[in-house]
Image (cartoon, rainbow, N blue to C red; front, side, top):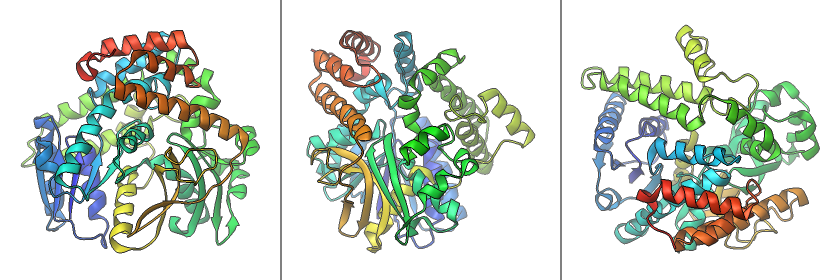
Length: 460
């Protein structure tokens, strides 16, 4: 089996291979290939991944490539995790949106559209090459905005694609920890879109344990739902994806981000620049573990400060630095993140053992209010026969209306990006609940096209 990671120059490569090696019963992987356009970072991650494999005494060959055909040929599974334009492009997305009084978050609203403008053409090109050189391979898309990019892939005829997001399984994982059982014993009624989803039930042997959890305020506060008020989540009676904060508390989110000295993109750039400076100062042949320790610290710092403006007890970057130096920074959430989702699905497909998990796949009748071809975030069963979205049926009106509105934006956005049409892009943003203005949408599109012309080209 060959697994290829598109975006292999990222520190996520070391996290992915480590997660793979922790799985004792995982099917045999012959080759782990890292593909990236940044040769310097690719060489560093290739060396570190080889050291991780060697220390585990595993017969996995770690290869690197800057040529997509080489990396994708004979691949069994491919994972996409790229950021076209890097941190600088993300910062432009944020700052342009904030200058016009709307959220610039990288997956939601205007910022998400700007990222999709760059992500969709790049991932589509990789998908075309993959279809030519390894037509039976599965692609797992983790490139943001994940649901929107996955929708574009399906719309262009690529059906061996699964959109993944670790936040889709927060309800299942949190409730498993809450009741003290393995997550696979639970069945979650997850529905929605990527970064816009709800779990209306989490059942154990037919009994819904979610209501008991929602009544336990300390438990909820310690989870990813800690940013929501009890009155809200109890009224809805569901486990809420943390990205719903941008919809349910939109003015608070915007105000907090505007008051902050740095956007999240600027914070991440600072973390990454410091990390790579530290790595450059290390003799990797002699001290690979020191580099891995630096990566772990940077990851810890990044996770601890994630959405800190929405979480009452989350530290700022400066606070995280002080706490990290003193050893008092809370440990990051346990688990393998997006890599765990991918590896769980691969293991289920290869071993024919049923897996229940949240994924982004075509609706195909699972959610009544969505079209057959709409990519939705939904509970799925996975085995050797593939992925099947579980039946959700009708959903409450409030959730349906928000889903339909955002999905309408997604359909228009994909069409506009594929056709490179400015006017349609403005209409797409007008449809988004966090923009809802044609004139503003047109202004945002014009500024994003100007800022990212090197990546998106000229639009009509």
